[in-house]
Image 1 (cartoon, rainbow, N blue to C red):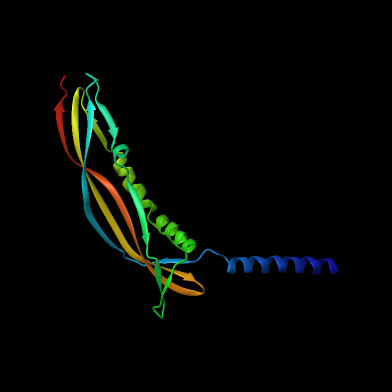
Image 2: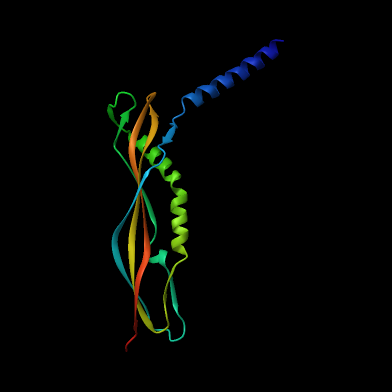
Length: 178
């Protein structure tokens, strides 16, 4: 009987410790606002020159991503607003990094899909020629808010996720000269 009582106490102690650890977890809860605003803008056009003057028979293929990789960046406000009071408070650096990581996870599929789409495109230069490619850079900016818990209060912060990717715009071909 005494042995069973010790085993029961031991199990209860483990359960209490686990519950305490779960309640004191440093991983805050995040909630993203539905229907973010999405804007697309042209950033700039880049000119890429590729020569294939040494080969008289074979075309030269260069993946577009080698010359122009797809990138995704998260920008998070330095301050958040307290729910109810509207008071602005600074977001601690460690929490800000966790929030950015969560935002990146949300948009990971968007980045991967765009990267896969761009990876299918090659810059092709026929044998014994030069091609000049105009690569247009597009920025797709998704703006929204994220709600999170900090110090037993709910706060909301603005964020933007900027996806920058290339589009092959124009090509000009020239013959190689001696």
